[in-house]
Length: 197
Picture 1: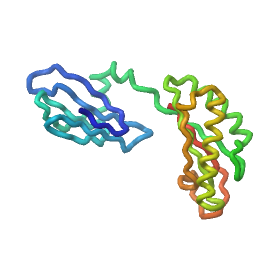
Picture 2: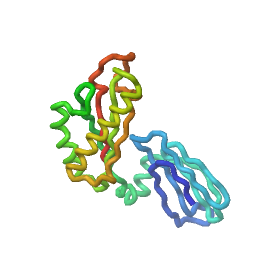
Picture 3: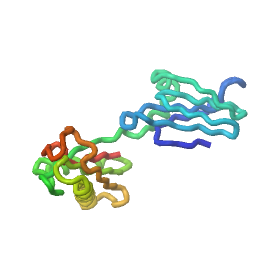
């Protein structure tokens, strides 16, 4: 049994000698999730793999042995499995007019590109995260960031995406692109980030 946290793993059955593992789990690196890990569990053991190219080798009797590999070895040994990997996510940033959930003119124009790119993806999942600058109260910025994310979500749904595939999240002023003191106006922080997967 495998207990998974978000991670991209590669598993393969091996038909080598009697002492060789019968299965192997390899944690592949992910640019958008550098802290990925996987816990491999058998009836006899459990092993956490938390480094890129870390390996859990599983023996016939359920024992687990840690190991490591390289990108080159993975590419050579598992070319067909690597070809099945999903495309990496695409990211877009849209800007807003001050204190509103109205896009700037430039971002309205960019939204068409976001929709076009998202339509080319087989998964079609979109995550919209709204943000604010540090002007105003933190609780008001939490509300505004969610309003911004929902405004973009609504536009994406109007653009033909299934509502259950578009998630909206508000982060308020917590994750600025440009760190500032309280009550400093910073237009680059008034944004929604869209991840297309």
